[in-house]
Image 1: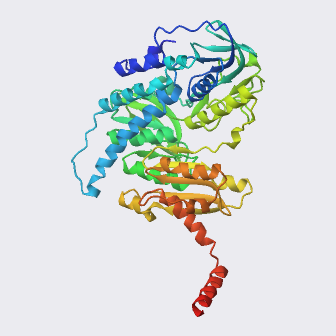
Image 2: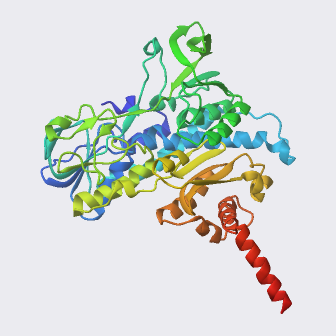
Image 3: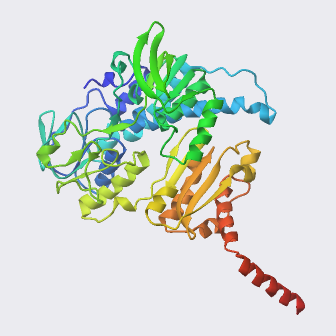
Length: 504
């Protein structure tokens, strides 16, 4: 695979990136030994597995067909959050008049925004570099891996033997079947960050996290953005009220939102392309210069010859049990290729489980993980644990409490009161939490900690926060719960008690 075809443009920053994640003159090791652990795929799950096992003294091989760092570093978390940081600054400046600060029109140097992203990505790439992993004692191989049996793979024709293996090949963009789509040069997350010119008109198909984040960012950068989705709700996995807060902000940022539609045709036009769609019998269209397809992910299970190793898989990915073991006794899987929790931090957590279970006959369970997530729009949506319907389906006795950020002093002070904190509990035991706030991703960890340790809303109430902070919203939730414990009967008894105290 030509590394230069995986990254664009080939400027100084991207050449630095490639020198770390796909060194030009890299020579694969001889691979003569039997490896204690062989890892296929060098995204987050693969890198954490390989480095952790090597630090413990295991002989480890790491095989990557494209770029070390996987999606997160190269075409996912790192570049997207760099752009979102710039877009958030634009939003702050435009909101300045509310705070008594006026700086005139905002000018976005899109070329510099993208250059900065590439520089920061290159800086971070040292953590995932081939040189670093080699220094840890990991044998790093570049090439396509295929199983040739239950204890051996071939990489570009070279045989490698292993005691245990981990499949961590991740996912790729799932492209929908839309007539005409293949006839235009559409973008996915794998090519979107190649842009060097700001599109004047950007259409995005897919109202999930990537679609919503990039729609808001590019609207703030000055593009005319249209966000299209077949569902009647953006971010359909999230709390409906939370999703509506974000959808409202997208519209205020100038995003044209089109929901509940049926895509009919994509075709070239004189000035770009045209997306034709139908909703409630009415025909409409969108014309744009660039089209981003952000309609989900599909696992990378093809071309691994999994059948030769006896590894079962489906359209959802590699089939694993609760200990992340595949149907083949020697082989495990971790990360996006085997999980519905397709987040970097989830992949890292699963990698830690694999290290214990594969190398030490551990019994760690993936189902025990409490995995929060966050969509980094402005405001953000963060969630951990169960949603109300999920809890009811499990037979829980569910109650819900909500605190609007308009009740939180710091949010009011900061002009960031557009959001809320909502929890679901079973007689005080915290089951799930959704936060819609400017800094929701920073706040959700407290709720995740309480759920992880089987805690309650009383624990939130008992936690002292600095004043004023937006994190106080969680304490307020706990306080509301404790006040609800003060029943009319108990209140009557207390009144009598205090009256008795006064009489003495």
